[in-house]
Amino acid sequence: MTDASPLPQALEKRNEPLTLRIFQSLWGMSQLPFEGGPEWSVAEKVDRIAAGGFDGIDIGWTPDLPCEEAVERARAAGLDYGLVCFPRSVERFREQVATFRALDPAPIYLNMQPIPKVFSAEEGAALLSEWIWTAEDAGFRTLVETHRDRMTTDLRFTLTLMDLVPEMRMVADLSHFVVGQEFAWPVDGEDQALVRRVLERSDMFHGRVASREQVQIAVGWEHHRQWLDLFLGWWEEGFRGWRQRSGPDDELIFVTELGPPWYAITGPDGKELSDRWDDALALQRHVRGIWERLESAVAAG
Image (cartoon, rainbow, N blue to C red; front, top):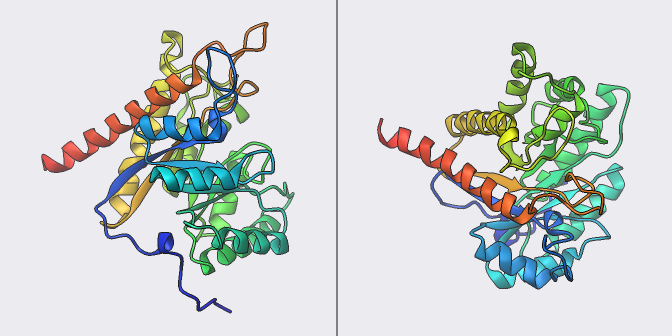
């Protein structure tokens, strides 16, 4: 039965023009600064996210992250936030949604990374449908992320799930497919067509650049330029398609999500070889540039 209680203010329909909003991942701020020294506090991370021109914070709801403090800090900084959650069972997810609904302010989206790695797409589709219904019945904008070590780890299996669950909207983290499927270079027409099917269902994007061997590469190194250009092209195609199917009040969310040292390439001392915060700011600039070009093209008619 639908809960008839009023939705939290953050869940009410916004009356804004078609817009891009770029969030920074809180998890992506782990083990910073690059130069060494004590890790930035939650307050310092949120301050840097706000000062860096981001529109909000992406918070993974896990026991090892200071989630509730991050929500409080986001509110104090005037930043919106969204949540990444990791459903395992229907009953447990219902409990989590009740927790999320009680947050003040409420998250503006729930991004699900489905944990069960099922053998049958029909079994996975049944779980996804129930989770999506549960979250959307509570008033949340709900999406499902493409991610390794999740139900969506395989590109073709994910496309089958998408066919079985037509209401499922996607978070396209294409880095996982590039390295997980080990796309050859140049990416051939068949693989491009499969990626395009994901883009056509994606209302949110995660910003990370991968190669066929490494899930996260430095975006400023010239020998990585071919992979950066590949991802920029995919994002532009995805943005263009989203704009064509969206209404004037809709928001496209892009999250820069560069992971800490176990994601990034490291040297013999275990430290990263590039400044992850600088790379996040560079990705933000690239993505805003894509959006501005699309806006200019529309204005020019």
